[in-house]
Image 1 (cartoon, helix red, strand yellow):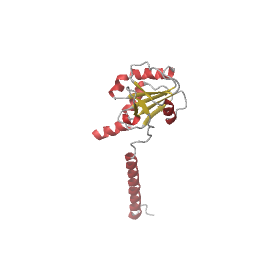
Image 2 (cartoon, one colour):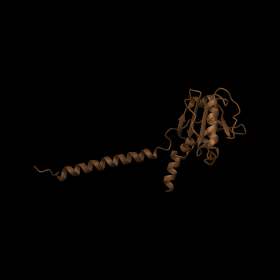
Image 3 (cartoon, rainbow, N blue to C red):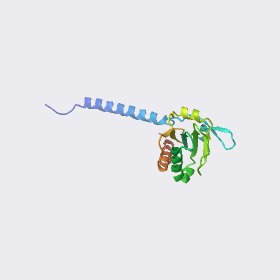
Image 4 (cartoon, rainbow, N blue to C red):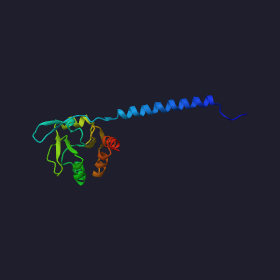
Length: 176
């Protein structure tokens, strides 16, 4: 018996392989083009220094660190602020904005980091699905929720998330 493959079945296999490869590549390209906002952050209003409200949407193009906590006196909130203070200058270089939403007790945030405060913290907690005492969200420049956690995140980890967001990666690919 001859063990060679005839050319007709080989051409059929090549056609199938080419068709499958083409479909996979087109699917991947379609997925990438639609990946601008995968997990959009719910919009909310925060208070500007003059007492006027502004929408989260106005911060598009800047990374946002949103912390939802019961009170500024809460130990876990103070621990997270301590982590942010370790990388404060680097966060400033990235033009990151820190927003606090206190669900039970408003108060003064004792920090050198300028925080803005959510106008309706209960609604923010509800929109972001926070049911516990604390949560932190890193929102990318594109409005995506890049990281969610209910524990203190080290400052360097926050910088890593901001530095490796989808928008940063996309812009780096374009400049090469």
